[in-house]
Image (cartoon, rainbow, N blue to C red; front, side, top):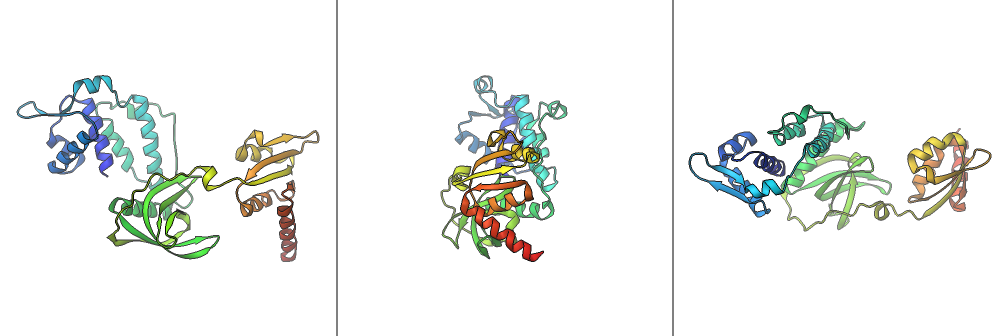
Length: 300
């Protein structure tokens, strides 16, 4: 990707006094014309690029910029490496680690340094997820429409989407794009996509800002929950909601209070505790759980 190449070029220029265009073209496996365009783009981005013709010449960054504006420390590079390795964990390749090796020119020791952060973004659905991620990234880069069958609580149907962002959040991968069916921006979970393919024709990209995916906006917590849990459930409450979500009673029971965002998810979550929880409020949801348990009794 171009952004990968620009970052690598910038880091290389910061670490070396002079680099020639043929050297850059060979390292990043592109033409000299592409390197010249990239250098122009770096200049437009505010990087003070200097070029010098003749023997001993080449491309450089103004000396004062290098002295006053250190871009990446060893710790910065290690943090970036952890992030890039996490992306490799999605598809099982070493593409991003190879990119990191390019970034580390002149600092060869950092790749063998102690790694204190390890991030693995892979999932149980890795075999089906990785091809989707690759195809969606290609569609975003090339500005191509995506078509897929989508499954949700409201039903299933075909979607035609202009893709803009591939997002990892809430422990899952999502696509953010303009849905032609809904005439609005939507968030699509990749695990719910089937029959995904990319159109041959391009679309005119909209001026799209980074979406606001704050929990308050996507999952407004407007259900005030009060429940009484068995003491053996403490580890789960701490793991999922934190130690401030409950108070321990004299009899060892845990009085739980939290604001929840989705009624169906709340009911499903409570049922995973089997007989170790009693919902106190809301009363309406309590009645729904009683009705569900009654229907379950008939099934068994």
